[in-house]
Length: 412
Image (cartoon, rainbow, N blue to C red):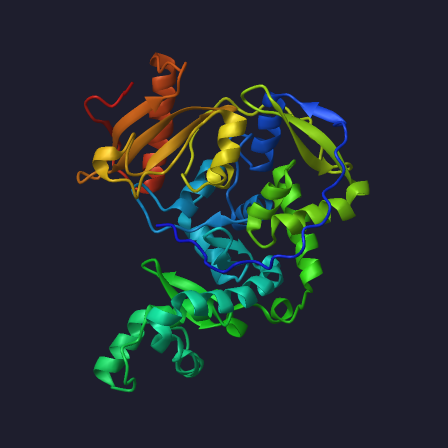
């Protein structure tokens, strides 16, 4: 399930925004979609190798992979990587974590992030401490007061799950209070602890200095360097962006800081126009000498996209660029749901053609409850065969025993 990070970012004085100018280039809607899909590694066919080096490069290119507990078919982080590499297997991600090439931290939610990026989360750790104390203090003040004891226990006993404290209390009686996940989460959010691995999806915590490699842990960066890195890294991964989109990508900087970065780097950038799905043109920024914005069209192959995939994470951008309105309905009461509990977007080429509600059934098969085509899209025989072929591949990946389409699966 998703969870918001309460830590606010600093609110610097808003600088003067870059002066409006006529765009040097206007991308058609199709061209903008192609650039966006290419930068998100969803333009090429999902074939080829999926060894640790390839998967690591993909995560670095897209920036992060969100971690989520819901697993109707497979967990979000595995679905995100599978959509790009059909030979990917979950053990590859475990190897990257064991090799300390990734760390688990916060972007807009809990995510797996390249370890090389860890120093740029330092300010987030600092701002999280004050924010969490204010938010959790009244209800969890006693738990937060035990942080020193929690740190001492982990320092002396090594990697720890929250349930380990309960076992210690019942068996050895060393702890005279009911341990709480709150203290562990606080220490993790503030960078004092890190997640070294997970067991049955439960976080296992250790001291950060024992998880983050020494050279990376020792690397200090200033707030100005964090702003420069976060804005530049976001623009490289998006291809084009507005100030808000730069700030929202990693959620390490504010929109005002992104605007300031654009002003300071005006000589390296060009102002372009992005044609949205409704035909309007929105101003955006791109690197003047970066990767080309002209790109070939993506493969027409149909693929299933995780609700937490980076390409659909910004729902407003997805709707503006692809004319695809998507909201996850986990928290919507069942009678009020338009589609289903956990519905996956269906991507075909450079457009979304529908959404699908599916789950691992009690029989072990991948059960398709419903498919809702987008307006103007027809699921004829050819597209239905393509969908079944893709679901058959997905079922093998998820360890399901075939695919079953339940009665009435094709919806209006």
